[in-house]
Length: 289
Image (cartoon, rainbow, N blue to C red; front, side, top):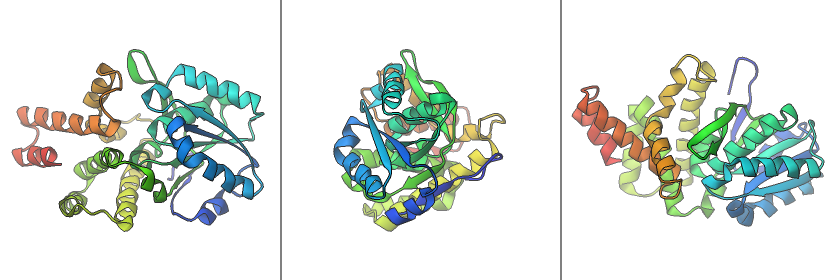
């Protein structure tokens, strides 16, 4: 990712050596933030990886699900970090999906006026969307992502081995964001996905390719409009206006984010068709997938 002020790596690799070769000069103290679900699956593994290499590691666990993106959990992270001796030279790590990514990023941006942080996404949606681009936020009672800040990570490590622990619903949840990129940017990528879904078999190479393509598309947009000041980055919000309204109206209980985005894309396509802004063929393709 090349931004005006700096750049950072998006590493797609299952190799821990690749990861540690990049962060070896980062710091000696890391503050790993995860949620109650991911903590059971991956926290011990990651903590051991760091400690085996001589790093000082502290941890904090927030509530899983959209309830984790709250002022209460953010306040908990501030207190936990201070108790653990986390200072400006420390580095936070977001280990989890979009909720952890958004909350940990907001924490890092505001704790002691900003400390470094690394994204280690564990869901397909986070690997292709929320871990890239620097958007951080928490929810308030009447709206999603109302309090937030643009704050870029120092590194994003995408390791698809984390996907092995995901249920099918979470995989489909992430695929919705991947399809979004195909609709926005690349008809060839759409055809690739269509063939893949018809066969109903997705290999590790397919996941690597889909994640790489999605990250590449998002990076190109963010590099040109990091903070949504010229309107270009808004193109990434296809389906999101209705999705956020749907999530808020249902109190984040009925739909995963990708599911809401899928409905939102269909709604946007239907509205565009009625306003004669798209063809019937386009609407049919959105409806099919």
